[in-house]
Image (cartoon, rainbow, N blue to C red; front, side, top):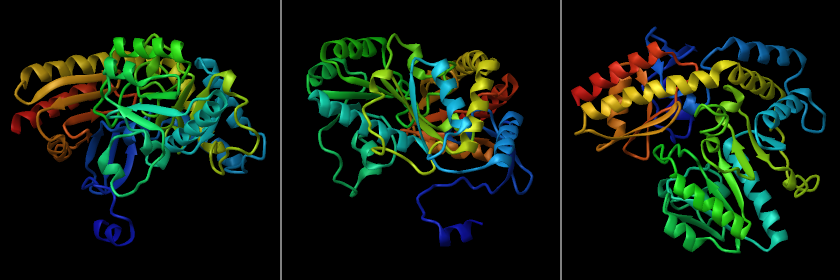
Amino acid sequence: MKTRESKVIFQTYKRYPIEVSHAKGCRIFDINGNSYLDMLGGIAVNALGHGHPAIIAAAKDQIDKYMHISNYFYQAPQVELAEKIVEMSCFDRIFFSNSGTEAMEGAIKLVRKWGKQNGKSTLVAFSGGFHGRTYGALSIMDKPAYKEDMGPFLDDTLVIPHNDVKTLEATINEKTAAVFLEFVQGEGGLSVPSNAFVSKIKELKEKYGFLLVADEIQAGIGRTGKLFGFEHFDIEPDLATMAKGIGGGLPLGGIAAKEFLAGIWNKGQHGTTYGGNAVACATGLAVLKELENGVMDHVQKVGNFLEKKLLNIRDKYKDKVTEVRGIGLMRGLALNFDAALLVEKLVQKRVVANAASGTVLRLVPPLIISYEEITHFIEVLDNALNEM
């Protein structure tokens, strides 16, 4: 398979040496029958794990009706999912996309038009942030490896140090149209903004009247134990972008916004062919119903359990582990060496995780992971670190 893949697919991914046969719950199985504990969750996509009966039932039911008819039609799965997001959040309007980067691109367009009407143009984001792979998203990121030789990018964008209150205060002014913030950075090493940093954003927002865009593509949809990551802070954004977990395994993203932004776009100014696909919206609704039916409570409890176990690992391996980061089931173990080496060791021991920001082990397992599976992971992690 590796040889065949290398001949026909662009070589942009560093793949694990695993040829997948099937997956179930929090387990991935290869063609040789080996079982791997999934601490990656499809990169935070498989919120309910693999093959969850509610997801399968919702998809099958909708497929029997229709799969795609375009956004020229009124569709119950779209409306019902949008209603559920509005019901569960502080937002009033939803625009569905196919992915997180498309949601971010749409949010940038919405902000730009709102800014044009209000005499504001500058977009401000923070170091370590990851917002997608399209040009708008890349323009508000400082990841050289993702941008090298592919510019120019959008004008009037600034990326300033994360969690730096002084620089934030010196940067924001009356020309600022929007501030983009991940309340838990995914690719950025699972860093969380300080309360002082978020409070300063809130203060400056009241002073200058810019929009706050929460990038909830990875931290959203129950991953932190709340629907959105920003709910852990004393602030409400004007927009939030979402994707990954919202589709339960199918491609789905979206923009959630406050009512005052509902009329910014005219008909035809923004759109998508596949966005809001009926099957994905049906599975999305199943995800949200499960979140309400105890899954978010479970995330809070098992997330605290994981944190305590990781803190014990940190204390045991102070020569290798420097910090435990994140919230809920979005956790990072900061190391003083290349995290890819630990990822490789874990895969050899049949645990799947990945590296973020070079030296951080990222853990974003399915939200249904059990205490027993967490305990097994910690035992394997302990053994791996001991051997390194």
